[in-house]
Image (cartoon, rainbow, N blue to C red; front, side, top):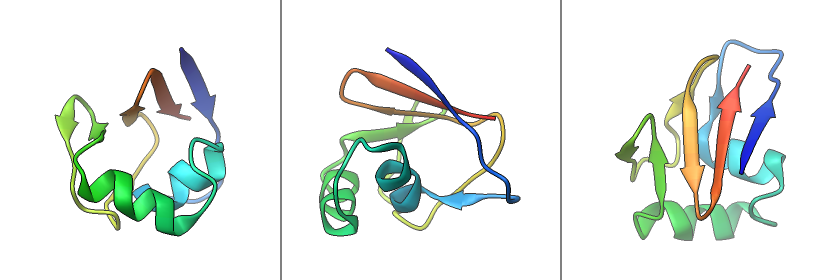
Length: 69
């Protein structure tokens, strides 16, 4: 499933994006799934929860792809 997420800033941190989009319910849960290697950014596994996600980036978690617009 693809989902567009609109941000009104230059970037959003990866863990905040997962929480903002509703894919995880807490920041703690976001930290765990990122550290376990369950999240990819632009096709590559990302273990940095503070990674800056910008417009045009694609974040995948489980069966969902978030496209930042």
